[in-house]
Image 1 (cartoon, helix red, strand yellow):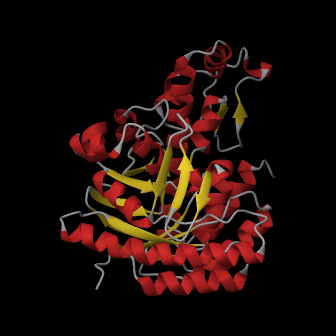
Image 2 (image 1 turned 120 degrees about the horizontal axis):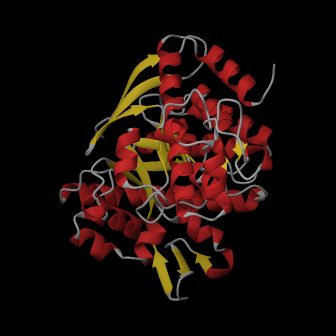
Length: 377
């Protein structure tokens, strides 16, 4: 019997949105939760002190990249990701599958696993479901993901069926290996992943399978992979209700306010994306009134803050004029301040979402937020 790690605190009165808490090895995580992406065990342009100051209880790191450099043995020797980075809260590590499968010309998939060439030096490597569990256990991940095949937009039905068959087999093998690591003292949790491309019967088949597999949490994969927005909405709304509410539900790779709000509305508890920090490095700031591109000439002599309603240190202490100056001169500080603001903005938004759910006004909050964010009257 799998120990449940999730408690639902309150369900919104007119949607599937809910608040809750995940009990993880490095502290409780309040949900819904946005997880900043720290691919190489660092959230780009952010210190661990920045992340702690904002209040993040969990961040994401990438198995593929960490396996290649610096290597699992070094991370284990350092005391896992927490000892290596100094960040003492929780880490979720993805399986590396998405990165491997995005390198389509460099990899080969079999029932056993996936063979691929390193993007760093061309060396050949093989990842199996068991090896991926072992790697993430060496990282001491608080949540680890199974190895899966991500079926992107445009995958035909025959390919989707075969990919789902392999993904389901890999999930079974991953769980068996995870239980072995647990017996050896590993405390982290395994999440299985729903796949099935954009075929509803395959999505239902996968959802039923992972529900019966009974891992501590479940992720919905294969969304936000290039499909039209309406297809994202359709398949999210179709898949989420098929999954047990006693499990934390995670949709991978979403990080804009509109996508987050829609995910929450469908009962999703967790999400991550590189977009807030990537956009920040390109001079794009979140505000309640939509995104600001700081490079625009209109901000040359604009001495107001990025967002007058934001209480982060960037909005308290810096003007749009100065931030534009930093960006136009390629100053490192530009990326640091923009990344801090964007992550603070999303973290604060999540707090507002939780309050709205607990007060049974989530639908009103979502409508008002998006009307303003999209500059609608």
